[in-house]
Length: 169
Image (tube, rainbow, N blue to C red; front, side, top):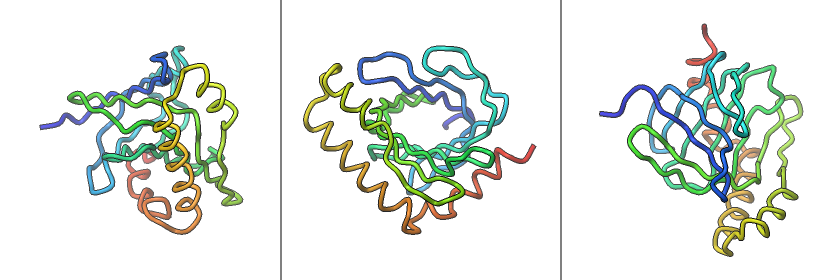
């Protein structure tokens, strides 16, 4: 029986620390595992201690090359998807390798954009990304750029019920 708490560990491809935080398991469905992080949660960001100021919900898909972070106001990104390797679970800890590219939908304008292509290009050389990893990353990016703007769930409204679980104090 999985526990209520999950540890989420993101690293970069070279193994360096990226993000690390505890989250509450909210649900599991055909899309993946939904976890929530409340305001005040102690975390690590780029290897440094941090405290989450704005709650969020993370969707960890079962086999996809991305994760989806769903944010309430005042965060300017309504949905922020990291392009990643597929999640690897070890008990109640999930390991995810961040591949730099991010697909984002802005809250006010609805603008969907691909971010950090320069960082991806730099790390592709520095970390020696294999060609199949590059292809998966670009494929996931193109998929997300489409679905973030066309009303596809869970990006349209499905996530809102989970977001309510972490924003109501």
